[in-house]
Image: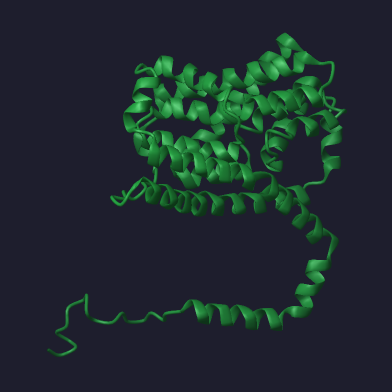
Amino acid sequence: MSADLASPETRPPRGRIGLTSLQALALLLVFGLAARPGLADLFTAPAFQAWAARFVAVCVQAFPFLVLGVVLSAAIAAFVPADFFHKVVPKRTTLAVPVAGMAGAVVPGCECASVPVAGALVRRGVAPAAAFTFMLASPAINPIVVVSTFVAFPGNPEMVAARVAASLAAAVSIGWLWARLGKTEWLNLPKHRHHDDGKWLAFWAAIRHDFLHAGGYLVIGAAIAASLNTLVPETWLRPIAEHPVLGVLALAVLAVLVSICSESDAFVAASLTQFSPTAKLAFMVVGPFVDVKLAAMQAGTFGRRFAARFAPAAFCAAVLAAVLMGAVLL
């Protein structure tokens, strides 16, 4: 058979130049050697060192909790029977959402850990509204966060109560909102490949899949957060700190940009002495709900269409809940 009569499947691709990994590595090494003087100046610049310190800090804080979340997610996917969640979680979504919110109060976990766990819950048949409520509540009101807030605000139990109440109210509100307005086609949840060789193979396969999937987005989000922290001067916040509305919005946006884990954000909020207590509360409530790295991880786990709708809704619910609880309790 002549080459012209060959089928498209057997005909070699035209106009495409393949680049192997070895060739790509060689090109990268050549570029590094050629640009070595400029790169040396860049790496020793104070701005780059500040960026690198912030990037490493975010990754060091987040990766242990990400690993914990990945392990929990893999264990749920491999060892927990699918009908277990149908027995534990109420069938009615209206009741399942607050139950999931209260469950988040007793399960320690950072936001980096809650995203893959929520993905595993959805894959196991839990209503997305309940899974998303747990995803928001677990990093916001778990025992570790409550204790750290007590330590950061000594002699101020009202701040702890306001944080727990505002976070739980916002998480449940988002769950009910998704139950009413959310659409399944907005979710692009990757499915784990089924393994017939045993649960342990499925467990390790799920760990590899989730860690590479969520870890890559975490690195991207940490890089963006470090870039924003380096480019935006802290002095920009001082003129608006005394304004009640702008102060709340400023710290809410700052929580999105700095991407601090919920176990340590109370100490940062306490150090912002020029801001009002309600603004500090908004910082602590918004952070575990939505930040740069968390939005990137949600996009990687549930899809970009989901993240584009979920992140703004979570931000608005968190700010509103913080303002209301701040007015009542602080």
